[in-house]
Every structure is written in C-alpha cells, then in structure tokens.
Amino acid sequence: MSPDGRRPLVGGNWKMHMLRGEAEEYCRSFVTGLGDVAAEVALFPSHPLLPAVAGALAGSPVGCGGQDIHPEEKGAHTGDVSGPQLVDAGCSWVLCGHSERRQDHGESDELVGQKADAAIRHGLAPLICIGETLEERQANRTFEVLERQLGRALAGRPDPFAVAYEPIWAIGTGETATPEMAQEAHGFLRELLADLVGDEAAAARRILYGGSAKPGNAAELFAQPDIDGFLVGGASLDPESFIAIIRCCG
Ligand code: 13P
Image (tube, rainbow, N blue to C red):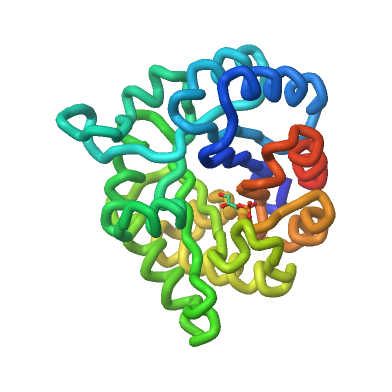
C-alpha cells in the first residue's frame, strides 16, 4: 500500500501472443506459483483467449481484462468487441488507448475517451494507456502530450479508472525509463489528475509504469512514490518473470 492507501496493481498485457492450450497451461502454473501477494493482478489476453483464461483463473484472485473495447454496446462493427461481450467473457478490466492501437489503428485521444466511458457504463474498469514518442520526448513535449492524452481520455469523466504511463520508446525495446524519469512523469500525472478529477480521486487512482518492465528493474521503479505498479508486456509471457515483477510490488 502507498501512504495514500493505493493497492499496487500489476497487469500482464499478452498482446497478440499465445494459443489456448498455452494460455491454460500458463494460468495453471501462474496461479500455483503466485501465492499471497500484496498487489491486485490482472491478465490481458487477446479476445479469443478470454473465456479460456477467465475459466482457468476462476476462484483465484487474478482478474482478467480485454485489450480493447468499442464505444457502442452492439452493432455493425466488424472485428470490434463490445463492453457487454467483455463482461460476458469474464472481464473486469479493459485497456483503453494502448499505443499499439493508437499506432496500428489510428485511435484518437477522443476515441480513447469514448472507450473509457463505455467501459465504465458496462461495469469494466478502464486502464487508460498514455505515453510519448521518442521524438516528442526529445522535443521536450512529454508533459504537453500527456496532458492532452489524459485530459481527453477523461473528458467523459470515467471514474474509477487506472492510468498506465507507457513511454513508447521504452515499449519492447529493452530500454526502460530511469526511476527518476518515470517518477517525474508520474508525479506530473498525479498533479494533472488533481486538476481533472480532484485531490481525493487523484490520490486514490493508480498510475502504472509500462515499458520494458522486468524483474531486474521493477523494485527500484516501484520504490518511486507515484509508481503504483506495472503494465508488463514481454516479461508477462513467462509466469516466473511476471511473478517476480509482482513480488517487487510490496
Ligand atoms: P513491454 O513490457 O514488452 O515493453 O511492453 C509494455 C507494454 O506495452 C505493456 O502494455
């Protein structure tokens, strides 16, 4: 727990990896190996795997979530997934605005806000992903980008929610933000949240770090006052390394 009472949160974003048999095998060894941990934990498999993963996690404290959500409840939207479908598949969380969706599918800040809003309407907790590119950081535009992304994502006032700060230059590159760089961004986001949702909600909301998080760097990142856990990509594909990261969180 942070001094403000925030329980750590760690998500495993499997992206477009794993087949059903591998996913079920993963869940078995993950749940057995995890034991008692301080953090809340959720897995984010790709959509076809959700029922199998939710089933394999049933009765365990590990939750699961979707990697995307359509703003509408149903309709002619080929390839999309709705909030009620995610709930029906066993989800309690959903990622909104991951940088790979912004890049691969042209998701705008406004669309991410509509997705976060839809998540709340359907009883899912949105994990809103934001982060700057290398060019934006080098041009000293990091804070401006974060302010725009978070402001627009929360324009429909979804609450509760969690935020993942994922600098794009650190995703899948092996290059992690230093604890000081990450804390600078997280501290800025905490202040921004106070302006957007008020002091009390800002103190309660969890801000996760994502971008080449691994067992070797998680403890010093988690030691920063405004880092409340991780959204892990590559290292979450191996149950042992994911568990090692979770154990760094209190
Ligand atoms: P990596 O941990 O593989 O860098 O991915 C981070 C990420 O994008 C999690 O959503």
